Length: 302
Image 1 (cartoon, rainbow, N blue to C red):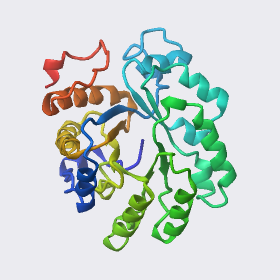
Image 2: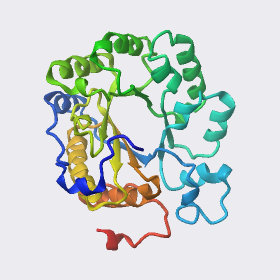
Image 3: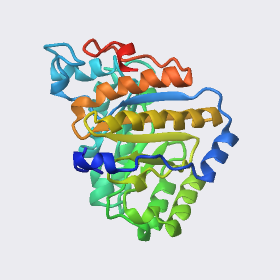
Image 4: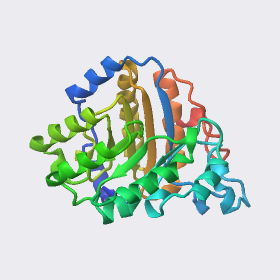
């Protein structure tokens, strides 16, 4: 993932502090008062040949990657559906590879978001909705990523598109154009997402600190964390996120989807293991640990 990438020599000069939560976030969570937060942590893809011998057994076939992935993680930020429209046969095959409770979070297909740019996309959207419906109970929230040049002047188009989606179809929206995060545009769009019951994606990347905006618009959170190949700042950033997540959980967070990215995805499993260990320790949770055999013992990483 190249979004927000900076030169490694610049990482120590970046202020990675997480912003204070916007007033609407804590008020929303307090109103929700959910006692037990459902936590889903995973990667963006399972088709990594360089994970063979790392988290997949030696000799694992490509067709078996997902089955082994699901033994370690309980969710996937499904970028595969961005590049190809999901269909019944493919989705049912993926679903057959995972256990009950595993969640697929499909990304809206690029022809809808980046080619059509949400215009005249009703037929394509219906095709997407039908395709992902075959995940059934394994379907998590969908992820709608807007193009970098899709700015506030298109807000009415965005809101009209979101309003036309089924009310029971859970969607999180990632805004990328920098102008969305300017004060004159921030509250109007995030308040509108809240009014529609649509979630807001928080993306934490080194070169785009504006996308770590601190505003939840539903009682659920969808966080995309972009690390830098296990640079020291990856760990300190995760530590701060754990404190933030603890606050949200204590205030009534309904569910959390936290997806790990690296500019070199080879290293995502290490950082996820670190994150889960620290969350269990710091927040007194009991999230199942991935079943890696290649990594240091837990006590060596804390």
